[in-house]
Image (cartoon, rainbow, N blue to C red; front, top):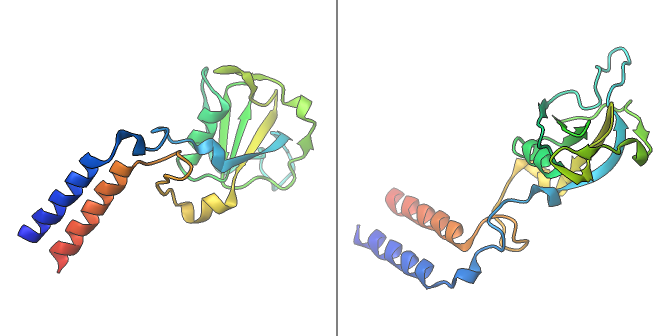
Length: 172
């Protein structure tokens, strides 16, 4: 047991010795960089056998404070592949996008987001569609990162290390 205490003491001292500047630049998670904008698409398709919506197998949220970031964060939290904003305040998340949904002119998606008028959140029956970057979506992994400064911190990595060391020690 003294070996475990020694390891935990060392890691605790190491965490205290680190300067505060070693934390990630932002403690808030920024999923927006994991997504790319595909364009403006028609929301409804009405073809028999294809469902009624372009983003058809997920969830929908409507908020009077909706922003692009809020919608993407909502969809990213459950590892959806597509996020769509519509009518200024609606957000759609889906694992698939109908292959019969037509891309429209960007000018058709011109409604400002209810929560940030400098962004556009689709149009009337028009979706501004975003797709998760495939490289970041592999296996739905969300790992801490110190490189891009979007998630995690040295402290959280040390806590993970302490837990792993403790588990290994207790199983030996």
